[in-house]
Image (cartoon, rainbow, N blue to C red; front, side, top):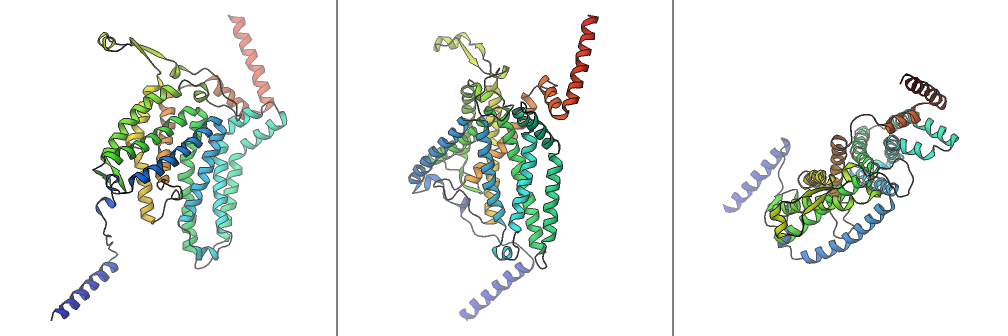
Length: 423
């Protein structure tokens, strides 16, 4: 009798499972509380911390070397990271069996990628390129023509890729090919939209690239360290080892670091000056009001306890607090998004090959979110409104032919002479 009851129960369970499958009901998988073990309870945490510290020092050292070399080398680093990201994302939904029947289909992805790169960086770097070749008449005319027709060139390159895609469609492969086509375009939008803001920040001044990037690194390090020693309360299931203690501790540390780091970086003109051409030399220019010290007299009761009677603060330090607040509270959600994305597709992080850095895509996502915010904040609250002489000169040099520039100069000279005569 007991055996018959067990058989009946197993059959009933099987039937319920089949009914769920037929109704497309998602059966949740059993999971551990918060998805894993907290760092404070991890037996191998000290070994992991040593590996992470060692590799982090090397990565920060390499990053510092690239920053020291200047704008162009930082931009090249961003492009290399872009290519590796695109490669990993292209491979995410690929199926080897289907690709065997579609020779050259992978090449089409890279055709769209480099077309998008030409469009984005062509628009971003057009003016610095013109400023770099101005002395050479032939080269200047060639570059000006290239910039003038850059949008048309990119459009026809895209149309060529579109026709290439249509001509490669195969029966019984339509669904897979269109899925890959849509996935490629989503990758281009995500990768290039965000990285273009990063490059724009670099040419506004290395300061506006280095400070936000450093704040993300600082936030990540202190979230790990505080969570390592004090973390007890799980923060979010998508990142099992993240804790509220680490999140709050990292937020406070990041805010303090933003204020101090802005003071340190703001003292170097080669970091604060915008780059107007594609040369590699260090820059020396007027730092602007944001990077000129303002002095504040301290109240009398403070000078009784401390030796300072006044303090000096760069105005940019107040703006740095806003960047620090965003890096502490909002940017980590970019990492959570990346964690959820990896779990949804059951993929490993392409940083798993780097010891102690299995979550490298999470940090890159945070960096991208931060780069977008830094650019929008800079353009909205820092860049002065109105038209400057430099902006007008840029338009004259890029939009007008040499003959039109001469005509403009002649007419402008006549207008100025008339005004001087009347005065």
